[in-house]
Image (cartoon, rainbow, N blue to C red; front, side, top):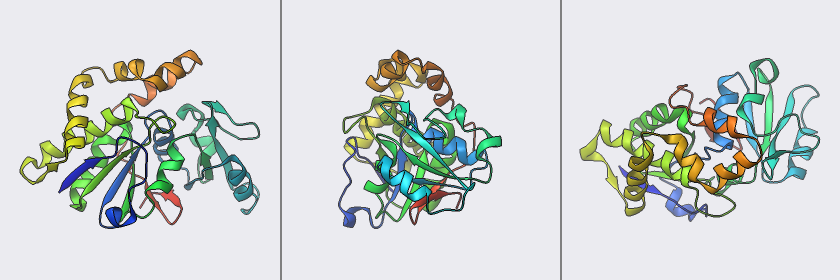
Length: 240
């Protein structure tokens, strides 16, 4: 199995993705929200790129079945039911509901890799389960950090490195790392004893702290609190 990491959130060519599995990672906070909401009983999550698209799509579903979530500038979007903090997505509100989600980085990433053979949702919250799923599939793997408005994202790369660490420990001899994957693995070694430090160092982490959202950092730094590994397929994210 070849493992690669796309450090900048630019979608690779379709022919590169067609036989690969992809794990989309946006630790702060989209994929953490997705994993949390699915684990709290959300029926499905539809990631869209624009706010207008979210409003339009919501109108196509029966009343009472669909909720809107997401952010711009890390803040809740006017007219939406939720922002982008995992703690907002409690079972009492999202259980059995469809969520339409739009965020600055994470929801774009799913569409950037939509031609991949299989697309999984990863974060620290489910990193062990995601790695096991990747290993069981046995396909070449691309870890796709969602980045920070088109730029490199430290915390997403560290999470990718943690996925790689799990894969190496499961089957060292059958895992081939590209240079980018080796770099993510080494970066994870730097922060593995204190993941929250990576958030405090990263640009996006600092921005969330400045906006009073530090509580989200502590939640998103939790490791393996769920075995849920959602899958993006046919435009929606569900449990496979």
